[in-house]
Length: 433
Image (cartoon, rainbow, N blue to C red; front, side, top):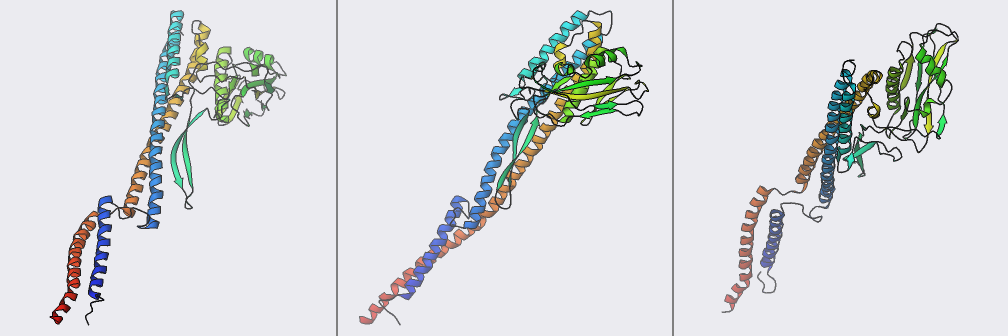
């Protein structure tokens, strides 16, 4: 039945054309934006996921810049430490030459001073954007001994985000002399006794390490039978027995830096003892004090075989805000090879200082390598996230192109169908002619 009031064919053709036009608009939008999901209304769940992932990509871009800045800073510190190591090698040449009697020690001392000033200049200039990893002499500021570099963003399953950092420990190679406030709070440590009868070594450690606190190696002796302990050692033990004289002296005292551990403190004290013993003429057979892990261990091959004889060591502390941290190459500042005794003492000191510089360069090298690995990982992770986002929201351009061609044909046919349907009522007029 035909009707001039209701044209069902036209309505069907119009609905079909509207559907085609809608799909055609969506396809054209995909092609113009390159995305199948450009807004939340396209697919709210996938759009939300992609936005979270995109925010992570943006965050990792900032982290990559942070890692690059950190790498550059550490590289400056490493290169400077390696240069200092080379200069210390040259200083060692002067010290070895000063061991001879037929040399001009004064000229060698002048050369040493020149090299020492060069080291100070390198340490002072080894900064990147104001950050100097070879200077760590501010114990009053927490965290002053490390440089923290943002390394990653970690997203948990519940959506919470936390950050992780890579910390680079500063390695002070300055020649600044430390100082201990004589009016500070002195506390005697708990000693360990060296007993030759039972062949036991004295061992002592540091319970807690606080930056700015002075840790002092003190010795306490009992020599009941006036035995074979060497004269220099007897003098040392007699002068400092049961007193805090050593705690106020720099020879056997170490002011802790921020970030120092018990191992750092006992290693520093062992190094100071080696230098002190060499200068004082104390033979290692009479008293040897070395570091072992977190412990400072004393041993003696010549201690008398009387139970009443013993030597004890302890680590005393002086707490004061006026304590001054010394540079890692502090001994270099007072090194004097213009005399025979000074040249002999310097020979023992230079080995310790060289090892300090080598350790610093090695530490920076490890940190720089870690930052490089992390930077490469962050780059790959960002690429993976971008690929994941693309898989969620990017349009398949080949498919969209084919669909566009099909929809354009359908649109033309829909227009033709609607035109035919709209002509149907005209046929009724022929019945009334």
